[in-house]
View 1 (cartoon, helix red, strand yellow):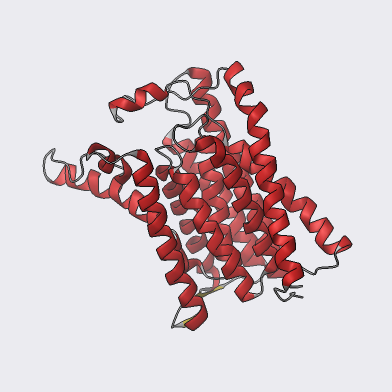
View 2 (tube, rainbow, N blue to C red; view 1 turned 180 degrees about the vertical axis):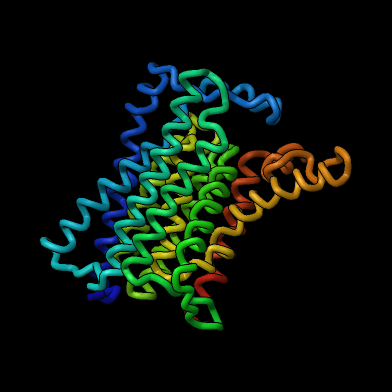
Length: 342
């Protein structure tokens, strides 16, 4: 059963987002000094821009701030909405409930995989944590569990704007796995300068608050609202100059949750627009490698991912964050138009 997006519901969503914001922002006051004491500092890669070396030792694993704030606020809000305010946030179908709660689990497990990667990095004081094979195997395993949960709940079809619904049957499982792994890695690659991944993800998540509300998936709207609030609270500490980095803990969680939003409203193809920056960033890496091999050592970009190319071209970190955020807002507007008019 869905609930219309009336004033009471919108106020409750805003209050939930504010609670998540305050929890993440206030937690940073004690968590960041704690990470400093544990010497959980980021090791900066030698192949990155030389001026990033001054960031050596900045605490990482800061993603725990918005992961904890979003998940805890979501659980509390579900109880308050359903049993105190009597706002029915959930469509009473097996698929919508499964996609919501398995989406939370997907994101948390992605974050746990990132945490393991970050932990190895800071303990061994190097910038390589899990091996590429170990990370990919973990991602595939988590993605398989998520894909199977949707499939077993009846999620075998996807909506394509202007085309309609396509039933993929069992092929929905590998399709879902591909999107989960691709997006989590794309979001991970976007995390390279202060505030970039957080700000882009904040605006992407704002879109899903609106999109889920339009489609009547108010449970997804609630989850997106608390996630956006928690990211904003984290950005208090992560905007340039960053006092904490989200690490793979945070970026893999964000990749998981944003993908889960898209599948949760049965609109995964909208990630092409909402996740425009993520896709551009990962494509820049792929194109750089392919061009380097094909040309015998020449480079297509000054440095990949793309945000480093702009850094090497003289753009400030703040300028890159603003431009990439504006592109994400534009992509979100296009995606919203497709939902409304397609």
